Length: 371
Image 1 (cartoon, rainbow, N blue to C red):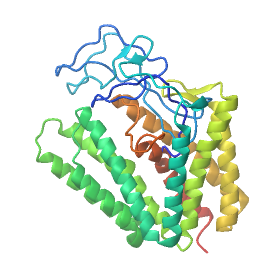
Image 2: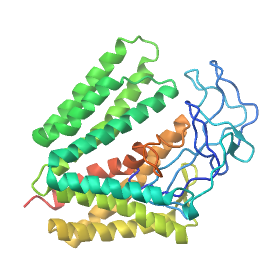
Image 3: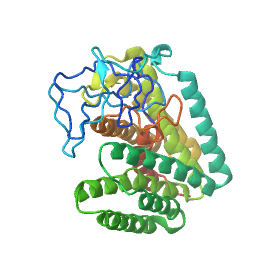
Image 4: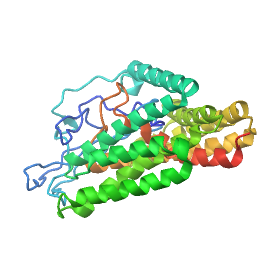
């Protein structure tokens, strides 16, 4: 989510070709390693890419992207597949045609803004008219995100059983609205058990690898998304969801503008080269102010309580963005998908939201109990 991932961290040139052979835009500073070893299946290469963040060239609403440059003589991955990657010409230009950046952000900003407004309208409309309708929106979004992750893992030689994963996610996203935290814990445990048994009947080879990935996806994003119904269930649940979503978006927008005008010092060059400390400072200011105002006027809490929520939000949103970056870097892709123009895939929008959700739910439960 990258809910807070900033948008402009897209290099105009073409990118790494993932396992499917589709790639979008090569990343700045990517280079082709000399003497790359081929994998046993005949695939060689390593992923290149890079991540979005609070930087001078980022904007609201994109996600992070992989940013690894292949090393000379890189060997094949342990599972027999070389890291899925784009082959590029020297200087970071791949076989894909170069694309021209859109303004300072290097992306289609009008499309990104349009998609963001449309998503916001769907969220607000479903929240304040029928609560369960909002859960259906969450269910669809998380389902698409899980499909993107499973597809990406499959291209890397990791098999994750999709049907039981989607069924378990549906139980975790819908059930807690009526059954509370006990139902969420039980649904998660049963989902893990079914996933392990399902994979067991497919043979022993690669079981630990595949089962570990399946449990990982059952936690991220499925279990984390299960806290949405817990946040929504109280009488003032829609307002609590708005606080959570807007605080996360504040991190994105604050980081975008601060990064554009002041971004100079990189926060994490090896994970997200375009995320800067100046952008993080802008995110922090926006989240603290936004959290204080929202908690006070929507939930009748104290300003300092909202500021605490905002601080937790900016830290977790940034971590969520970085975690998604590491995942994509490891499997050698730029975006999880292409569903949302100007944004990438569903998981490219959800990463920061997922990491922010649980801390915000916990703080609001402790600091601003339901009247």
